[in-house]
Length: 275
Image (cartoon, rainbow, N blue to C red; front, side):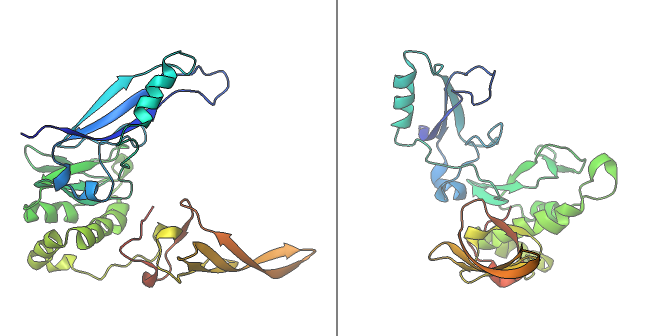
């Protein structure tokens, strides 16, 4: 086995911004891996072991290391933080939010959200849970992949099937396979043609900055056109001024948090990231 290489490190904790809450010690959380060169996520600047939310996602490869630092008032705090921030891999990778399928070595990672899998028995667990579900299957096990995609996990309190799985999650998995792992998508659709359908993204929420250039974005009272080159939205919106509705021209800068509902499939490209 090759030596594990540090591929990412980050700094967490420290000064509290909530009144009455004590400052915590800074903590360095590093990620080591010996399989990153065979990982489609790593090639996209992402890693399952990078902390996202409360905890990193378990991965079949690599390891996490936590190094305790100092509180902001401690004399050694500055040196500790400086060392972490000067590391060549500081904040190098991101947690793979909105990624539903990726290849990690000989395995296929699937963010099924509502579905679990017993990896020893390969039995699908469809019982509802409030915690996200991430599973790994052998990348060449097309039959098991098809079973996962055909599954109907239970909704909360066992009230029928969780509609969002088939309506949202399965299409998202298929889109990632089609875009990032065409060899697996081809093997799947050759054996199960039902999964080779034209993607329909209408109604799904996506980040505006990742839409196609020239996308027209509408809501009840506004119509905007997205200029990807300049990163702006230009259009008109209706404003109620002095007792009358009037059309107001607006040009707004698009930031990474702006979202909208897809109203036309032409708005979606390979770069589009869904919420």
